[in-house]
Length: 116
Image 1 (cartoon, rainbow, N blue to C red):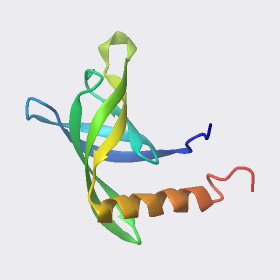
Image 2 (cartoon, one colour; image 1 turned 180 degrees about the vertical axis):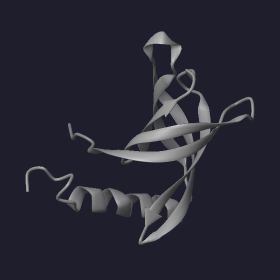
Image 3 (cartoon, rainbow, N blue to C red; image 1 turned 60 degrees about the vertical axis):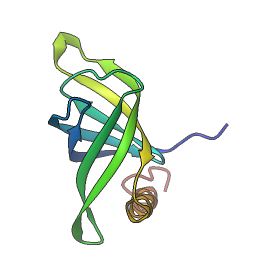
């Protein structure tokens, strides 16, 4: 069984939830096929979320959009939000390609490659 590499990031995101309201979130981890996010409220596992975030890619800010599904939701103590694991359901080919390139850059970076 292969282990999916996960990289810590700090990407601000906007999240559209099922009631069509937009909230801020923070993407804290990126991995092939998904993200982890800090969010203001718990969201039911299996729910679909649309997310939008900006990342500096090839020296320029780039907007990414994805339709995702909540695969895990862990409520934080004292009702201060939740940690969500999201699986990518749909993303444009260009965005998907760019995310894969970002994952490759993170993997090749000495900052992330602690065994180098």
